[in-house]
Length: 111
Length: 113
Image (cartoon, each protein chain N blue to C red):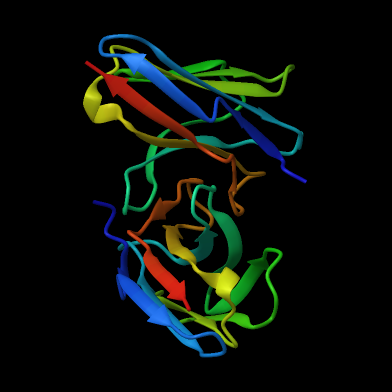
């Protein structure tokens, strides 16, 4: 049973556009929601994370929006650049415990 | 760079063999978690080590085992390798009792033929 559902599977965005990736979870015990960025042949790199006590967190061009009642969270990448082309994973965990990952979104930013 | 290192980078083994993968955690961290990432999938949790003991396990058979050493580094051992064990094996370093952040190493690509 997949506990974190991620969409879309792939995304193509024009340079300068906004990339939006969505995730939905089932386990109401989840209280930590990170996003990871992974380039081919590399390990996932922690990008930004949110706890459910806030509805939005912004770090540079990256923003997480969180909707606790809908059990959904999303990653917005503003002013998308070709260097942002990578696979993005959402994840969730109930506290300081192992992460449950989504299946990933392959983002391609084209000029 | 996270400060988490893994060795070897790549490994090719034959079905039925045994393999040992190694991970050095980030300075100041006391917990290591291992994940398996199949091609085109998200990482799946194998197990976690804290204070040299297994502190949680995912849905993986007993032929997946591990160790954590006093310096918090860790090993993942897989016995009786199967073709489906071919994957990227990731270790993640964290501090249990502190923030929830987990930092991943570059991974070991295991190919079983």
